[in-house]
Image (cartoon, rainbow, N blue to C red; front, side, top):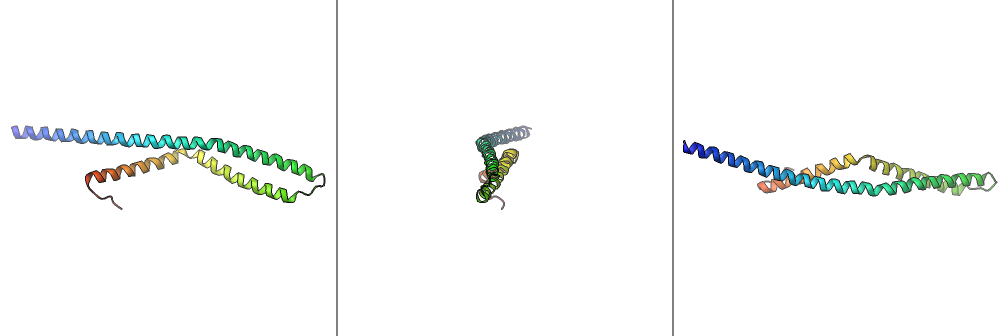
Length: 135
């Protein structure tokens, strides 16, 4: 009877130790994910002024285009300048689209960060166990 009691106590102790270890590792994982999320959020905030500046630059190009059109009606040929402005406008449109895409996809960036953290966590668990990760 004493052996059975000792066995049950050992099983409970081992279970509690495993639960404590899992909770600690989950806590470490969550702190890593929080850190990555904070860095990603800050990175996205950095893009906001650049996006606004690109939008302002697009407005300026439109204004210049209107001014050049007005000059063209006065008989001044401006085809070369207009072509350059069109190219600049196209580049700005591309930049604006990419900036909007980055600003609209923070969830995808955070998901990627969480997956990366989970992979790192799994590798560290494998290292603790002494196993090689599956390739």
